[in-house]
Amino acid sequence: MNLFKRKKTTEPTAGKDSALAEIALKAINDGVIMTDKTGKIEFINPAALTMTDSKSANDVIGFDYSLIIKLESKEGRELSENENPLIQAMKTGQPLESFRGSLIVGTTDKRLPIAISVLPINNLSGDRIITFRNITKELQEEGEQTEFISTASHEMRTPVATIDGYITLALNPQTATIDERARGYLTSASAASKHLGKLFQDLLDVTKLDDARIRPNLEPAEMVALVKTISNDYLEKAKEEKINFSFGSDDSVQPGGNHRMDQVVYSFVDVNFLREILDNLVGNALKYTPEGGSIYVNVRGDGDRVLINVTDTGVGISADDLSHIFQKFYRADNSDTRTIGGTGLGLYITKQRVEAMGGKVWAESAFGEGSTFYVSLPRLTSDEYEKRMIVVRQAQMAKQLEQANQPTPPNQPTPPPAPPITTPPQAPATPPQATLQNQIINNSNEGVQPQ
Ligand code: ADP
Image 1 (cartoon, helix red, strand yellow):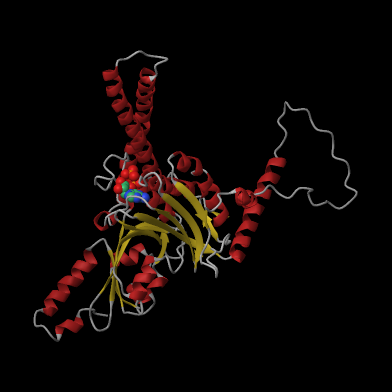
Image 2 (cartoon, helix red, strand yellow; image 1 turned 135 degrees about the horizontal axis):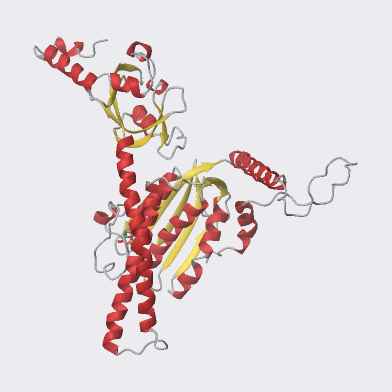
């Protein structure tokens, strides 16, 4: 099929232009696919054929694009239809700009890291152009940079901790005698070295996900109990700072004004990531809320999502700043925040962690009145949760069995032979070891009480 025939009839120079365009499309290394608005392939260039492991244009033209382009997240996680930006862009006709993901090549197990864009064409037939390029080399170079930052941050953390340690000794009247002027200088030096230490730690945290050393370790979890348990850790700090802290799981106000409490909502999360996310969001809420203010953490089911919000009555964020706060090193600069320490990396790390679990994070705020940060994560139905729990339990039992079947080391005395089995094997008296979520569910009654 000649894509460029259509123009020939309307413009005298179009024939030459289209021939040149065709040559260019054939020569470039980026994959280009043109589809109609239903997603049927109308054109494919040689680079796209190679990247998708397709034999010839004739084999794919007229078929749906999804036959040859299947996308996973860059962490190798399967993307549901709702989270898959390619499917959404093709369906809605909204543009997609440079999404980084992994292309599943043909029917093989091969994965190709790509950046993919979708450009809807404003013509009557509603065609779409999909372009994608191999980013293996880019990722390798970024990986080297990340490796450098990570090693440098790691190496610099130790001397900074030593400097801070000596400053602390110098400031302690029991270990050093200094005059008031020196105390002033050293107090400033101590604050600066603490800031540096935090900066190196944050840089390390940023690079961990960037260079693929940390992958989310997703497990099924009951989110109300889990977030409640993590929230317990902030009670003490909130009390010290004279800020009210409360946790709830309400999704509606019942007649009489009572909140509906203790919903049960399931998700598939990395518990350590969730802790980091809440540390950052609640940590910020504590930092940017003055004495006497309040913080509310809430978890609820919202259709096929689990929605967590961290709300504070603090200094708030202006509309200008709100659109930048998730960028690396961005800090709002105003009289309320200037004196509050920070690295500008906490929300960037939060976004990274949330997205690695297939979620989204955003904020709403009114300057001077307070802020709400939302984290939305994919929700599991109770059936899906149970199924995944069965897999977790089976894996645990298999591990226990494997450990039990390990051969006895040679220097250990040989245990006496087992008595002959005369009755059928009995179920163990105690159930297999409880998972983290089970433990949390069991402890949930001791959690934070709403105020
Ligand atoms: P920082 O280390 O500066 O707190 P973050 O990335 O965590 O870095 O936050 C970026 C900026 O967003 C902060 O500097 C602050 O201006 C603003 N911010 C974040 N959370 C809040 C909040 N709860 N209330 C007001 N401002 C906030």
